[in-house]
Length: 455
Image 1 (cartoon, rainbow, N blue to C red):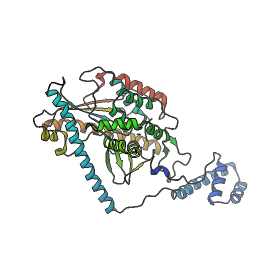
Image 2: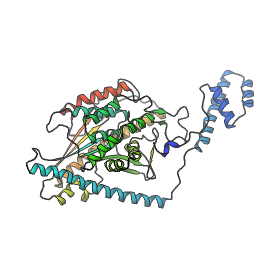
Image 3: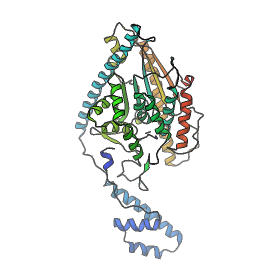
Image 4: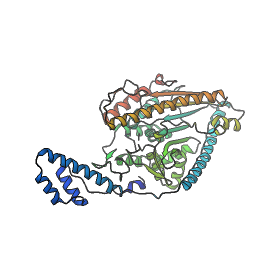
C-alpha cells in the first residue's frame, strides 16, 4: 500500500515449504534437524551431554540455530515459484510492444479528455453554465496507512460550499500506492463512495497485514507479509455496483490511472484503470482490475507483487510517488491536442490538486547504527526526497506549459503538517489512522490549507 489499504494472483499460489518452527530453542533444533536430516538427534544429544558448561551449551545452540536457518534458507529457496526465463531479445520485444500499446491508449485518453472538457467549455460559451470549464487533476500520493489523511481530507473538502476552491468533479484522478486504493472511490465521487473509503481507513482489520511467521525471511516467500485483509476488503469494495459506476464515469471521457513498477522491464507502468473498468463491467471479470490496484500498493519485499499480462509488478512509489502525466510527448499533450481539435475555443485552466499522504520534512530522530535502522531510514528519506523533486518538476511543468501558450496551469498542494506526531507507534494502528482521518477532515474543510509552492 506503501496502508490500511496497502497491497490475489498466481503469485499467491506459491507453496510454503519447510517444517513449522516451535518456540523453544531445543525443540526447534531437534525437530527441524531431524526432519531435514542435517544432524541425527542421537548425535545432538551426545553433544549436549558432553558439554562442560551452560555457556558452551548456549553457544552450541546458537551455532546450531544459525546452521539451521542457513540450511532452511537453501532448502526452502528451491521451493519458490519459478517463472520461465525469457531471453533479453524476447523481453525487449515485449517491452517495445507494451510501450507502443501504452502510447496508443494514452493518445486515445487525451483526445477523449479534450472532448469531455470541450463540451463543458461550449456550455459556458453558450451561456448554459456560469463559470468557464477547468481541467481538474487530482494527484494522490503514496504513504501507506497514512492514506487515512488523504481519505479524510477529501471527505472534509467535499463539504465545502460552491466556490473557486470547492471540491470539483475531477476530470483526471491518479493514485500511487495507498493513493491508488483511494482513487477509485474519489473517481466515482459520490458521498457514499467517499464515506466508504474513509471507513476502510478508519477501521483497519486485524488481518489487513499478516506476517508469514518466524521464517518470513526465507527466499521462497514472495514477501515478508501477506495482505489477506486488504485483498478481501478490496474484493468486497470492487463489486458490480462499484465497477459499473466507474465504467459509467470512464465513458464520459474522464480518466482514472494508477502507477506501478514493472520489475521485469525495470520501468514505470501506468495503468488506465478507467479503461479496465469498462472492460470489467462488460465481462464481469474484476481480477485484473483488482491486481492493478494491489500492484500499485505492493510495497516491494513487504507485500506480495502481482503478475499482470506476464510481468511482475510492485509499488508504483518505487519509480514515482506522484503521477501527473508529464511523460506524454508534447504533440500529444492536452494543450496541443486542444489547439488542434478546438482552435476557436479558449484552452481551459488546468488545476493540479496534489494530496501528499506524508509530511514534507522527515521527523528528526536518533538512528541507531544497525542495518535495519539504517536501511529503513534511508528508504524513507529517499522516497521523500524523490517525491519533493517530483512535485517541483510538476510546478516547472506547469510553468513551461504556460510559457508555451498551451493553457494556464495552477498547482495546489496539501500534506500532513510537519508538527503532527503519531499518537501510537506502529503501522495500521487504528488510533493513529483515526487521528489522521480526523486531521484530514478538519483541514479539508479549510481551503486555506492548500499551498501553491513546494516547501
